[in-house]
Length: 250
Ligand SMILES: NC(=O)c1ccc[n+]([C@@H]2O[C@H](COP(=O)([O-])OP(=O)(O)OC[C@H]3O[C@@H](n4cnc5c(N)ncnc54)[C@H](OP(=O)(O)O)[C@@H]3O)[C@@H](O)[C@H]2O)c1
Image (tube, rainbow, N blue to C red; front, side, top):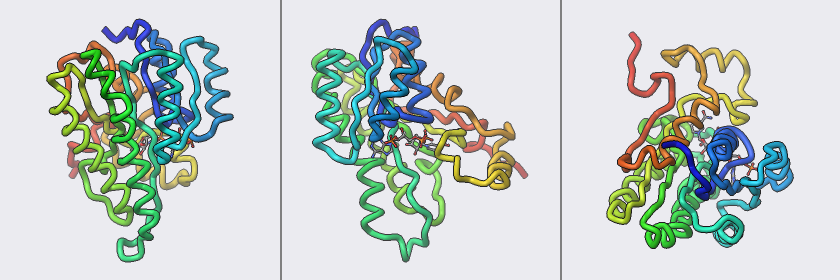
């Protein structure tokens, strides 16, 4: 049952890439979708393009707790109690040796990628507990499960969200609130726009399917995990990666 039948779902990082594709699919499946990201104009354009009455934009920087809470409150005011939260907004961070990695950047990445997810959860969980119904999905990364050189903040933040999803899953299970993590492999989104074609070729060569995934392929799994069809699925992580994470080619 991946039909959302008017359920309200909040999607962060909804102005492009994975968040936008998932918001579009949720709208198509009948959800009322509140889309959060920083760029107000881009977000408004994406909502207009959908031409759907069941989508709305709430611009906010998730790293600003007050702004994030205001956006969630406005979303609840418009569409009612929240059934689902797709905490997807994230920054890739900068690549630098650990010894030189700026501490202000480390703190910023942790705040946007990890702490803000907890803030969003704290904003939506009380009503989910009261309703005895809820589904939270967090976007992790292969860096939620593997180390990667030169980007310690990103790796720490993405390991953090996987741990957070499991902690919330076990605490919320008695309340019928589920929490899971989705693990994108190499998904072709604007986050890869700056990468040269040659580098993209190398990336594709590391994927057993020999191609990057699309945001739409990721969205199909995200929507399933958020949906009532996944009612007995919690504390899980699911990779959408063409086989990259769990294989070894020799
Ligand atoms: N694509 C991949 O292969 C891949 C792999 C592993 C993990 N991921 C994760 O997937 C998620 C989505 O990334 P993507 O690939 O779809 O990249 P993207 O197209 O660049 O999307 C990132 C989204 O996050 C929003 N965002 C960034 N910082 C924000 C902030 N402080 N407050 C609110 N919104 C913010 C951006 O919108 P604004 O600029 O308008 O704020 C945008 O909507 C991220 O968590 C990323 O770490 C992606």
